[in-house]
Structure formats: C-alpha cells, structure tokens
Image: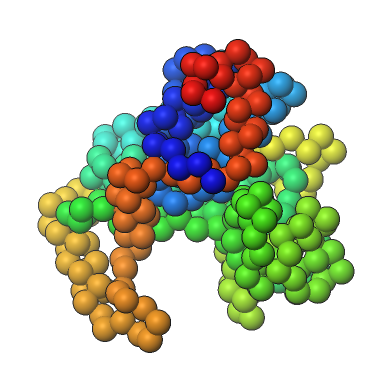
Length: 349
C-alpha cells in the first residue's frame, strides 16, 4: 500500500472533487474533513470515501453548490435543509451557526436534514470544544439503506447511528468520544473488504443469522450487530434513541425508501460552559480528571490507560509525521478518476 503525506492526499481529494463539479470552497471543505479522518485513524471515513462521493455527484444524489436553507428558527434552535448538498458543508455551517447562538443564549440546538454523508462525527463537536464549549451530535441515515439488526434480530433495520460528545480542556489533545451504536461502523467492514482482511467475530452475522468473520457476508445481506456483544440490548437502545433524534425529530422518518438515497440527518447541541462554571476552572478540572484516569495501573495486555480521544490524538501526531497508508484498491480508483479528469500528471499518478 502506498504511504502518502496528508497534504498530498488532501490536494488529490480537493482536485478530484472539483473535477466532478464541486465548487472550490466546498471541495476544500470536504477534502479537509476526509483527510482529517485519515489522520485520526478513521480510515473508513477517509480518502476511501472520495470515489463514492464522486459517484453520488454523478448520480445527482449529492448536489454541489446546493442551497443551505433555514426552515424554522428560534433564538436557541435551528432547522436546516441541506438540499442534498455535501454533508460536510451543510453540517459544518450548521455547527458554526449553533455555536454562535450558544455564545449569546448559553444553550443552542439544531437539526439538519437532506444532506450527504457527514463523515467523521467528532469533527463537529470538536469545533465547539475549541471555542470553550461542550457539544454533542447524533446522526442517522434517515430512510436511506440500513445496516444494523435490532438486538435479537437478523434483518437490517437501523443505521450505525453514531454519537459524539466533546469537552474543552487544558489537555494537549481533545477530550471526546466518537462512536457508532453498532458494534463497528459500516465503513470498517468495507475497509476490511478492500484490504482483503478478516473481521473480528461479533461485528456481523451472515444473512442466515450465523456468526462470521468474512466481511463479504455484509455485502451479501448480513447485518451489523448492535454495540455490546451479549449485552447488545444497550447498543440497540442507544441506537433507537439516536434514530429518533436524527431521523424522526429531523423529519426524515425511519425505515428505507425505495430510492435508497443516502441522507444523513443530524441533531446537534452546544452548551456554553460559562453558563455553569468558570471556563478555565472547568478546562483544568477536565484535564485533571483525564490524568486521574491515565494514572490507573494498566491491566494485563495493556501498556497504558488512555483518556477518551487520546488514541486519535496520538494517531494524528504519528500520521502527520509519517504519512497515511492507502489501500491499493482505493489508490487505483483515485488514479482512474485522475485520468478521467486529465489530472494524473498534476496529482502525481
């Protein structure tokens, strides 16, 4: 697999998206988020997604340059229609808007619907944490294709339904969670398939309800399992609540519509820390809490205890220095797109 510097991958993503018709500013936004996911170690949401996004643009499932429209609004709430634009663009703008409201109103929330894939969820609450605020976000694919079986079932009825929460702190790296309510994100199954790897038992079952480590079983109709293994009812319950926040509250609904169009619905909320505690005191105490957790003696098989979000911070440092591995199948697709748009020499293919 080629190992490529993040800056070069970002340029490749940016140029290919523009080749597909994305406006310059939108292409830059999508490329920044996508390679940011690679840097954090979330390769399933990284450069591997660019050919998929371009395919959706070609099919008119993603609309470059789409309107961003406020449908309903109050001093503390906003409902945004993304008009099928890039999810990264619509969602980033909605988070910025919500942060500004929280600065004056202390608490603000928004829903966003009719937008493309929004990628790595943590990108958005981390925007608020940098501004000294707490933020959370949930996401669901609305009535797009589903991937996850309810606890005890073997049919795909739920999305992977992720949630992310970020806290401001005095730590070197951010303190946050970013997790699917399924055993694993669907993109990680696709990544394993692209790399020819097996997957751990407990991630999926096949279409007949049998345990499997073959990622191809997912493409053949097998569902992902909810988070929690034998206690998967916990992940299932969390997933159902996220689907209500991000699917039903946004107006997207539940189930699957015949078009199968990917449609991320999001709920986000931002809280101004200073409405509750002095910000600097809070940031110090979050950092103290993180160090308290890290000072735990490690169990057998572990070298250290990490605070939530620390592993992504470490990966970002390492990959910023050493580059990002790109699986051969994805690199081949990127090269084909570069040739299609007459960019192979410009992009170094």
